[in-house]
Image (cartoon, rainbow, N blue to C red; front, side):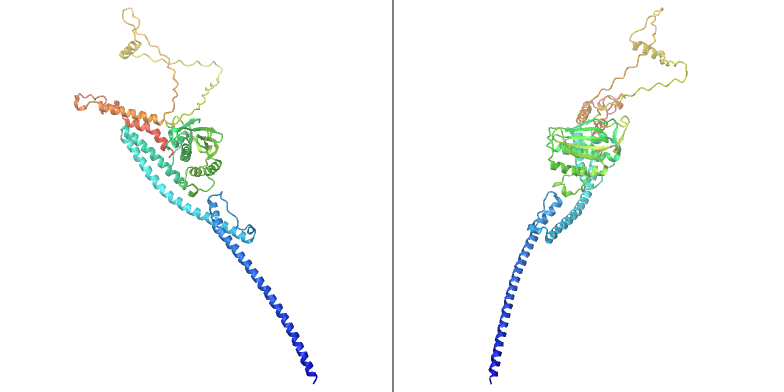
Length: 503
């Protein structure tokens, strides 16, 4: 009977111990669960912070860094900002974001080049049509200049032709920038003609002073005539635009070791260091030319120079300052682009400045050695023409001498043989300053005005008696009549050569 209570007590004790063990284990499980909940909460908070930081970085990338990177494709001086959090720079996230910027820049550059190429193709086709129309207009103006003789109409036609020439130059420069050919092919021409041809295409051509120090006959090969004229025209245009209207632009043509240099000095404002570096990059022609790089409106002069220097192996330098305070531009034409023309058979244009170089004096030919031992033969006597006979002799001897010879024994005058006078010494030609286009135009206007006045003052042929003798000054005067259109064409020929010989 006593064993049952002991067994019950033992069972209760064992149950109590089991309860305590289970309670302790439950407490431990609850504490572990609490710690895990805290860790989860901390991880969630950290994840939320990382997500917010990543979101901020992406927003910063889209709002600041990508536009700056795209702008840097066009403007190299722009800076691309870094990550929003400096600690992100060297992390995998930072490197991934930098790769995104590089990919964006590459794609923007590729698309920009493609779009610019399409724009250049469209502009090239448009300028081709414009050039063809301007050439037709130029031919029509030249025909009108040759058809009409009125001075006022001639001056108007000359002015229209010059304006058309300037428009043609602008269209030609735009076509060259867009990759088109320079234009019509030209034959070999004097280098000074190519320079004055570029000068004649400008509105302020009268402000340009050209000093020619080249040897007579220095010329350009055919495929270099038009590029040199275009380059000179654009360099002169920049010099005229960026200098005061009361100043001159000085052009010097000099021989150098590698060829010929055309130096252009202006008295303008000059350029800053950044502008000078950019201009030198453009005229060098090393970088690809995009229309979007030329400004709004686009400035195509230096870009066209760069395109031509690269195509025709020319050299242009604009990195130095002019002694007058402006910019000095130097065009170098190497020897392989030069040729020589006989200035006697094909002289330069009449309006081109004459060279300051004097031809070297010809050395006297050495006497041929005497092969024999005998004396040197004497020079042959100069033959004296025999006197004339008959009536012509009498008229020549008596009339040209101005008095009669001595009287003979029979009282008649005796004829005297004329002596041959020495040939007159040739007089050196007077060196005249080069004739300007304004002087030629003024002389042409005066000639045409005089011709018109003579025609108006001449009497009507119907009122004169018809005796078979042509009236002086009339249309039937034959060789005595003077056609002013021939003079106008001759006077216009230098201007035509200046404005169109290099086109």
